[in-house]
Length: 68
Ligand code: FES
Image (cartoon, rainbow, N blue to C red; front, side, top):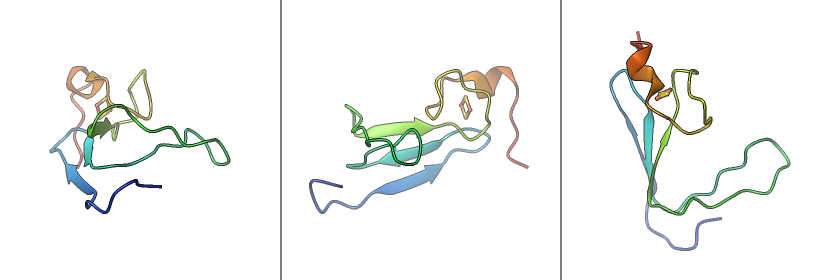
């Protein structure tokens, strides 16, 4: 659960990841303990090709991912 009341924002990068800003926690799978990232902005993979899912590792550029 967030530790403050600051809004969480999600920005869709054209042909890239989802940038999540704010105090969030990520559960790798249902039922797993959520982990709090050590940064205030994280990039979530949207292309499916990242080697560090659920985070983006930049592979979308190599694969020329297009959102549409
Ligand atoms: S969106 Fe960047 S690796 Fe998938």
